[in-house]
Length: 380
Ligand SMILES: *[C@@H]1O[C@H](CO)[C@@H](O)[C@H](O)[C@H]1NC(C)=O
Ligand SMILES: *[C@@H]1O[C@H](CO)[C@@H](O)[C@H](O)[C@H]1NC(C)=O
Ligand SMILES: *[C@@H]1O[C@H](CO)[C@@H](O)[C@H](O)[C@H]1NC(C)=O
Ligand SMILES: *[C@@H]1O[C@H](CO)[C@@H](O)[C@H](O)[C@H]1NC(C)=O
Image 1 (cartoon, protein in one colour):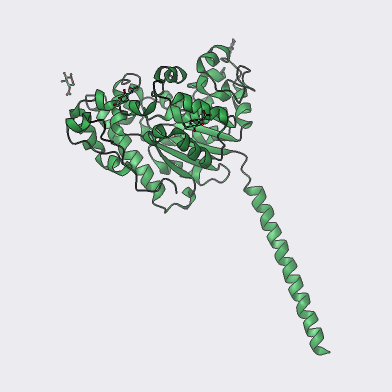
Image 2: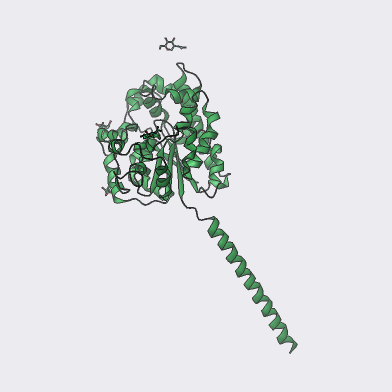
């Protein structure tokens, strides 16, 4: 008799405890749902000048689910030309945060009051600004041509930029004006942003060679990095590029920063050029996007051998295509300059797997591959 009522009591207590547990789990699930349902995925492509970032940007820009802007921080740098890269990085960070959240009022600081979509730097390379709701020239599923867009879609009301941004599942920005990963920590650790980083690097000898052909175009940027103009400015800039990109990679992969887990991917430009479809799939996978047949065909076409002219017409600031072009510096740079760049960037090059050349013979021996496998993991 007593025994049975003891069991009844115990059963009741267990039942109540179970109900409380279920209730608490429910509560936790609810709060999880409301907190962890990011509306958009945000991708930041970090790179340097002349490193193939226009092409990588376009790989995202042409995707129908992506709102893409190229170099939003150009406005910060060009508005404050007497400053320096380090001082400007927090203004750059704040601009990136706002743009990721589609809050375009941040441009009030950098553009005049009567602004339109075409006041944004390189707006015509952005499919989102050449298709509805901004402009009806292209559909979201089209591969766009910037020339047509520039003619037809200019001077649209600025508020449509925000409207467009809000309508996509992914916001992707490409930026060469980031030199310290820790400037981005507040963005990376913010769950409402859901930010992921694709870090694009390129052989510094190729970067140096390509920069040499565009020194004048890059002079305002170079000043903000080197804070001087002399015969050494280009070397000062390449030194800072090599230093900062090695450091960004080290910081991201050392594994001590928990909020970077699954949020960082390294891409070497040369690997992309060698096997574009595989690398594009990897990047899309990382970003939560699917490869469409239209984009696959477009990538095949743009990276095809001998397609240099066609490619350049699509992205006027982009580097040209294919493996040969990524090796062009071996014909254009003197061995003296190669040595100088190698001395400056030795650590970074060893880190990213770019073989150091030891003689002019090696430089001209095109069968000698300067791209080595990277032993490090590409993702954290
Ligand atoms: C504002 O810009 C539009 C388009 O560029 C132009 O037509 C208009 O006259 C401008 N208004 C003012 C007040 O400047
Ligand atoms: C820079 O280069 C020019 C031409 O090559 C030369 O005349 C000049 O002396 C150099 N200046 C310095 C500071 O080395
Ligand atoms: C693109 O190229 C790859 C590799 O050559 C090939 O397997 C694929 O079928 C091509 N895709 C399209 C859509 O042309
Ligand atoms: C690419 O490089 C190879 C080897 O150097 C050469 O034989 C070929 O003609 C080059 N192709 C183009 C399009 O330049």
